[in-house]
Length: 222
Length: 231
Length: 172
Image (cartoon, rainbow over all chains, first blue to last red; front, top):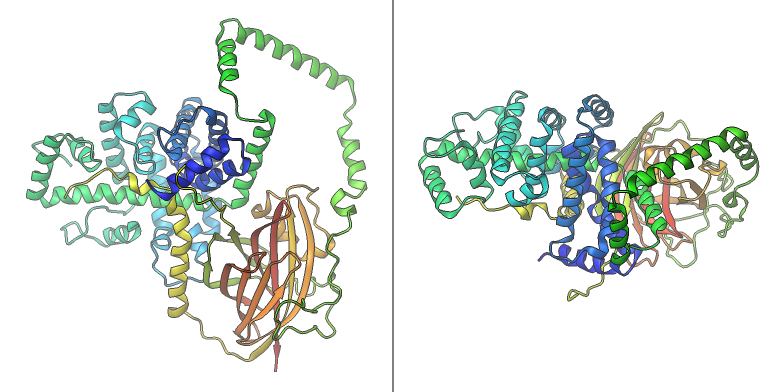
């Protein structure tokens, strides 16, 4: 058990006693990660922020029923996922245009890590590297191209670390379907990235090794 | 990538640790024999790592103030319900809400209330605009309230309890609270060469504007968590 | 090459580790990429403003903060509706000599002039907490002469504090 999980438990116990500050601390701790999950699935910044708000309100209301059988963040991310899925059902029409507008606005300002690294030039930290505009743009565009069912599985898996059984439970489909969807999601995402010059898994002297591959490898080292 | 001895999604499931041991052993044997297949698993790994990094970077683009607003909304919601629901009450409400008659009845009641509200709203002239004007004309509590901390008595006079090796009164300096417009045309473009958040966390943000980019360093004083680890 | 479940990647501490990572990168940056700057400015006159940001208020910016109006209207401050100048301090900072400004809120802002020329100044700033026993952040930055640099975030009286630092080099 990590310290964070332990700390979460302490905070959850206090919040269950009605201590507002403890719940606020939980919010502060998880706000951005919950947002990242929601954004990964719904691909609209404002909708994702709404989901963050709704998820924490729902979590607060359900606190008396939270028994700590799973960790708080697993539970919270499950709530978030369900809200994203509900959102997807309500908004069948993908609102790519509004996301495009937001993206343009963000890009005008420059990526966060680049902004954060104002003056940290020549530092090849992973955060800075991954923030490189072309890589982020390629990923955003590739993610936008994926159907929501594929985005859901890949975000649940990669960002939330859900098992296939947990995803099957959350999405209400058989485990075999999850396995198949995840495979297709990864394949489609890779193809979409390759179409934009980002090649994965081609390093280590492989015959496909290209400049693009090197770029992508540099970009993803955690 | 397909492989003669197993389905394409098997490699993905192997990467995720989702295969039964006998299938996993089969994939491992194939990986040892086929470097291309090994690179495929690396690609899956890289894809996941990059995806997380990109989404995290996107999440970091959101200003703290936006989350502040969300927290405010959550607090309002919490205040509205006073305390977390008690399970008994929830159960009773759910039972009531689950009744077949409850939703139509509430819908009818809602429409009635809305109709009444609309009726009264149309009858009374809107008073909000007048109220707003009046409010704007008088000082707000914050403005009316005398500042608990008086303005600095004299520009540049250092506090007595802290060593001030060089600080000195600014000779001929502008009046304490009036200054600030002289250098309005100066650019705020700053280059952060070094930053270290000690015992806390923080972010560097930028504000784009007429005078270039203004840098804001936001420090977050992390909520200390008690050291009771045995709860 | 056995792959296992990668749940470990998703634990929240990564968010908090980011700052230390940035800090580490910044240390490397300052060693590797310190810009050459003529050190012909030996002193700088700085005005420091401690601003109280609160969620209650009508959103108006008082005249004494008009120089920050554009910044305070930015999304960064969207959550705040009250802006009040708590205190202003005017100090002179000298090259390579730390100067500490103690605010009535209890926070100390340490400033050191690291160098500069007619157009640009290099300054080190360190902000400590209310009890003065812990540095919240320290940073080195280069800024145009007369430019405003902002440090914000410490909690104070139900709101947050924002410190505005503006320095002008003094020649000779």
